[in-house]
Length: 79
Image (cartoon, rainbow, N blue to C red):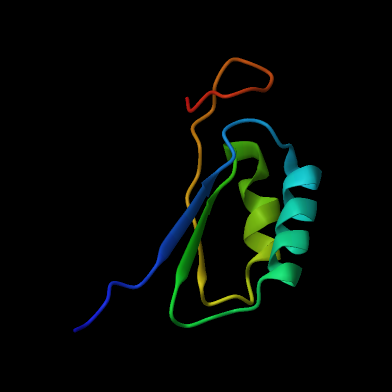
């Protein structure tokens, strides 16, 4: 029997700016080593995307998505 590859996603909505998102990403990746048997997908805000992209550049098991821009300053908005 073949099992599906685990797919873990984290949607940050609009709660972290670029610096906080990069810090969270570095801390998370330091605690979770790369594994070829799973995929992690992070969804930072559009404004934090570039910072998070740089933080995950060396990880083959991490993918990125992005949240749309919303008029609110922060919060649980998906755009």
